Length: 201
Image (cartoon, rainbow, N blue to C red; front, side):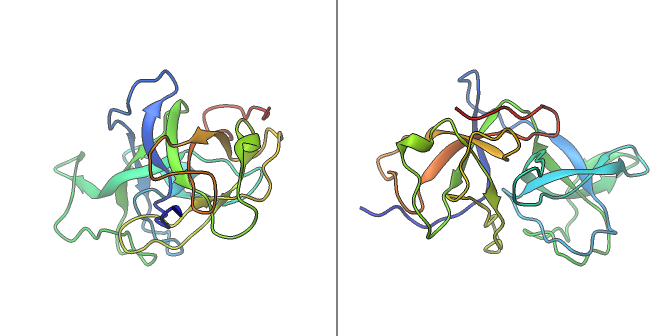
């Protein structure tokens, strides 16, 4: 049976220790000056090199491809500051944060370097095989579906190079998943903002 085509970006599933992901993350700010990128759950982000007036670090959408770092993935959000610093979700919060912004948005990012994510393999190309496990690969950007990220892992460019974005740990172990187009992979962010990239093997 063919794998279902359901991209959703980077979805945290567990920690490298084997413990299940506990829903944790840290709050980051998407500034109102970012009038370029829309954001959805599962989108990979990267540090923008600054902070808001409260000292919350700012982020921007990650860039797909070799040598481009990744901080983590958005796991919830569209919140905003209220009551002098508490973070809540305003009534006007969209499911997808729009490209053109009238205010800053505060999102929860799964940014622990030891989080394992599930991500779909891109359509087309030569499907990854068992030989790719342990290698590093780049991400491919994709448009969200109105709810979730459209980012996927690339099946062209899997190498041992330490500057690739994710490490391929193996297939997600489910009865509806197998090697081939749209396979769901377990990956670790390799070129992480908080950790040096490791070579593939």
